[in-house]
Length: 489
Image 1 (tube, rainbow, N blue to C red):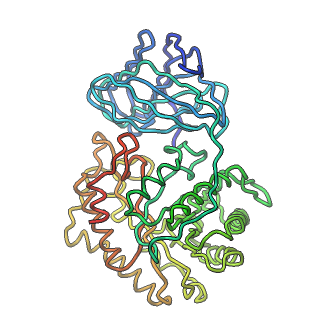
Image 2: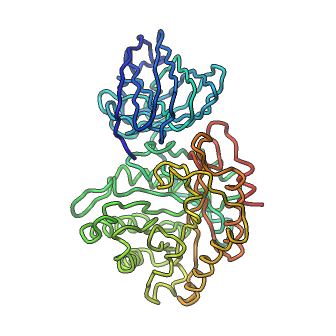
Image 3: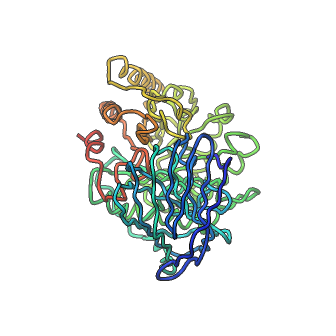
């Protein structure tokens, strides 16, 4: 994520209190502009009005910041503000580092701001240390042009964060095999929980459980950010406990639970230098969770790519062997190279002892066509591509089915090893970004899902509540009924 601010202006703000338990007493509104974002800030007695002339290319092209906010690790905070937008806008908020807009600490959340002034609020837990002068941020780029007004912002400390209670009683899955799953996106696949999306809460698992349609949960984790960089490459025990909390709460509700290593950027850039850390981390994970139920699955690397492609056939076997020593009956998920693309799965070359193992699954991610799935979405390589259709024509469908046919043929030659669609979606972006149409996205999701089920391939949808592909809106407390129908009807 780019964090370079090319233009900066400061505007003074009147003193205001933080409510029940003041988190700050005075500060300054800042407006940060980058790339082609153009906006003007006017403040009047604590009220900030931002006129957006050019939305820029990314959400962080325009950031309105409330500075000088001391905040403490291990505390729960409530944020409240009044806002109005003309025309209506969907904006992101987060708590971040002063002087480095776009570097988020925690508290990321999206809100749909309407034309009438209305109060918005939410709470979050600060799970990492802050600098002395943090800032509360409103991400206004990428949402279109118009005027946003922010007034009466309050940040209150609600006290110490409750201790995570890790359950030890686990429900067996209701189904004999995993079939339909949902993913928590970047809660743990980030430098800090809450930096790239809302922090994970137990109530989210309850919502999924109550709905009853998903039988599995995938938990992506960016372990690289939480391990020592020299032998023995120890995982931060506080972070491991937090991941354990998430895994155990998922198992306690009877979900098939997939724990992965979502990214390892250093391994992708320099495989030989970082192989020892990769294997050491998996040794720690496998030993920590070795006595957990067998419906906890290990996904050894989300999307191998870069220089790692040339080493992946060897490293995946080494990782498999490490896990098997402590977990003889646990399902191990191995992704194909080159971002787990469907057409690269046949590049996997695994020994027969692995492909014959009934507790092995080969993972693919069917983002086909890639430019359709990610058009207009920042950070995915297709942000400058627009208005690409997926009408479900014969040729549209054939591009996907041909790749699935080739994967199945490869699996048949490799002891009929099981295939798993571990992640799929078509990204939704603000209308101003000219992303794919909702009709096309729903049509694509339904087809991919149906094609997997026709071939008895389990699937996992990306994701539960994060912007761009969510099936559940935390702001409204509602499921996306049309998207859920595409997944289940």
